[in-house]
Length: 182
Image (cartoon, rainbow, N blue to C red; front, side):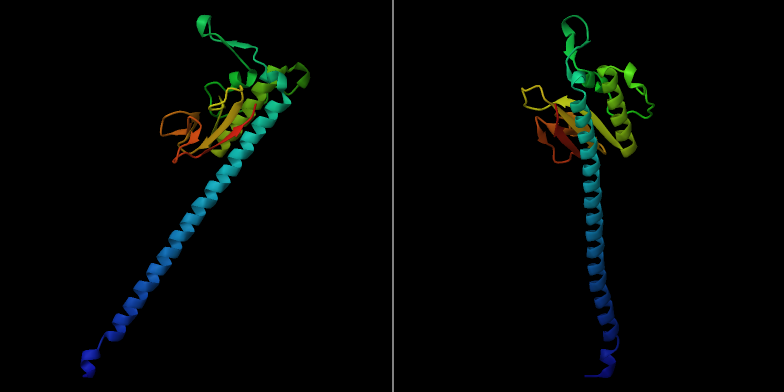
């Protein structure tokens, strides 16, 4: 073999080695990105579970607020709801909060429920989450489920792609938790 025909082979070997190394580094970088995404998702789930647990404990402490004594609607559309369902109706979060039930002697169970809900809704807003209180899917026992969702997911049981659940089953793309309460 002629030495001139071997010229540049070392450079080709270096380029091939760099190509293999870059593929390995790219794979490691992708693994790190996936690990960070999983870590963020786990963090959101923990925050959501803490919000749901907080609301559930507040409901447990204010049993009178759970009595269905508030009339909502008129005529044939009228129905009895409790203070928590009434306070959460139509809201997933609030953007500001100021305490309204500071003097506990003047607050009744309905006002305490409103205060509890406003605190939870504001916490949800500061964390980028949404909260709802719905009847548990498939439950005839009048139990509530606390839905906490984040990103594009809505805290509802429905057929939309952005719903948390559909007839009690989590959707593959949903980012939410559901906690059975009262």
